[in-house]
Length: 98
Image 1: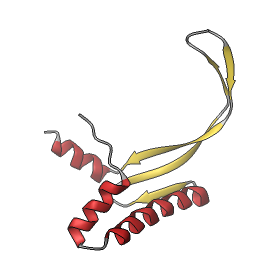
Image 2: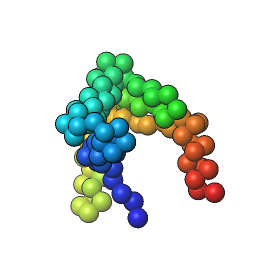
Image 3: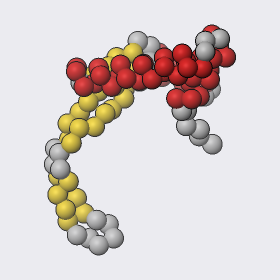
Image 4: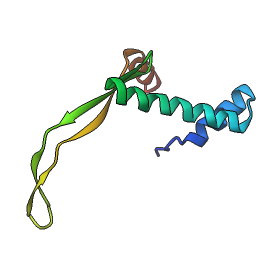
């Protein structure tokens, strides 16, 4: 069963691991996420060593179809974020699954 990890989960981990105040932990997590977002806006990618790379990619507009009604609609162009895990992360995940 999968579990989503929330900002509060990460803050709680920092609280238990380092003994910082709950507010400091929450602020730290929010600041890190904000830096990732700002990096994506500014440079279109953010690389976190031994973790992976977040990249902004552009998708062209395309013709799509509603599966229920079969009506064709134009899907507008948009930006999406992709994540490419580092070799180090993949190696750790594969080691855990053995």
